[in-house]
Image (spheres, rainbow, N blue to C red):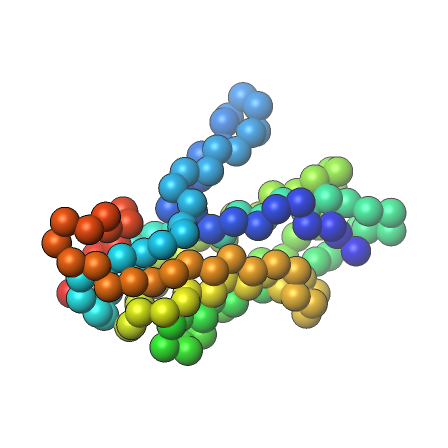
Length: 138
């Protein structure tokens, strides 16, 4: 089965057209908001998968499961084939509602098996506190 090289959630990613190299910007670690509910305008989950013997021609199903601090779940599914030694998957999320403080969990599940998790701390922050970019307050 495909082997995970990395899994991270960030505000944005850029792919160089000439080299196909990716640049990841503003990795989500902490989100602060003065009031709840709030919304994360956009973020992207990026994973890189490496082909292993026997993976040729096989289709993989990647499920991104997002669990908000209040327990609300969101899922994004992506299918892919490893036609080269490595395959990058970018799953874009827009308008993610955050109802309260706590842990925001992003889980990568490949063919129904847990592969990785990225946890973001969601905190209440007042004026003058560092507020993560991409967050809108209601």
